Amino acid sequence: MKATSGLSFNCTSQVACFNQPNIKVKVGTVITWTNQDAVAHTVTAIKGNDTANPQNAIASQIFDSGLTPGVQSGKTFKWTVSAAAYALNPDHTVIYYCQFHPDMLAQLTIVQ
Picture 1 (spheres, one colour):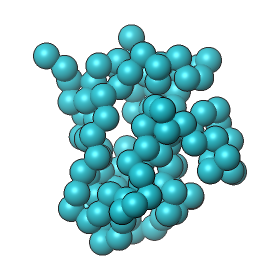
Picture 2 (cartoon, one colour; picture 1 turned 135 degrees about the vertical axis):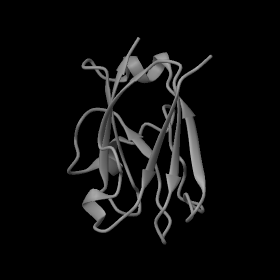
Picture 3 (cartoon, one colour; picture 1 turned 45 degrees about the vertical axis):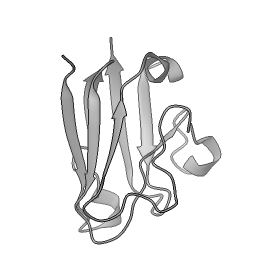
Picture 4 (cartoon, one colour; picture 1 turned 120 degrees about the vertical axis):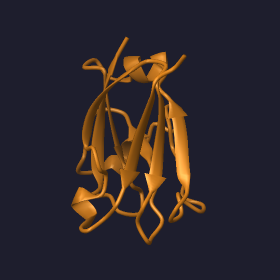
């Protein structure tokens, strides 16, 4: 049985939209992001840690909910934490952001 972790975005400001900006998850965990905001968002992984220009390092092979139409209000995006995500960066973290609102950032620390 795989663990499930529920994450959401609920914006009062673009910077604080991801409800848990830093979590530790195990390979095999199913993560479900739920958009509790009134506007669309994305959940897009980046390689490395360049949070000033995340659009230059999109790691869609890890996860990317996509721009069209994005994760609409009340909708979800699911992803299963993979070994590829664990190996993406030397520190076993994956930073992700919203392509519509690049100041929305969060980080997963992945363990095996």
